[in-house]
Image 1 (cartoon, rainbow, N blue to C red):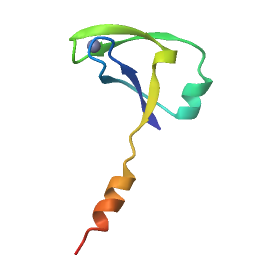
Image 2 (image 1 turned 90 degrees about the horizontal axis):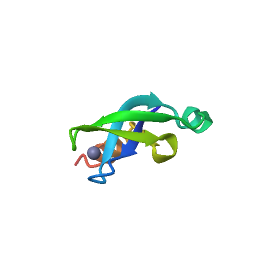
Image 3 (image 1 turned 30 degrees about the horizontal axis):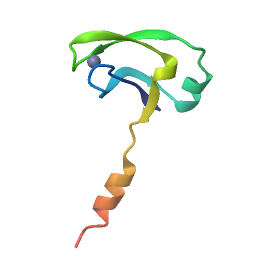
Amino acid sequence: MGTLMIRCPETGRAVSTDISVSREAFAAMPVFFSRTFCPYCKTSHEWFAKDAWVADQVVTSVRDHASRRVA
Ligand SMILES: [Zn+2]
């Protein structure tokens, strides 16, 4: 599972929509339209599914790297 992300049109920063979805499920979704509150602009941005992407929440590679640094 990942989190659906959009790009803020004003600041260019990635904004989480707080929508959890798998990459496969998102790819299978029909085109849709939604609205997400942007913490940077303090306003809501309207966006289309084509503007969004799925960000993985799992960061196991970072943990693996840290464990190998034990002296
Ligand atoms: Zn914004």
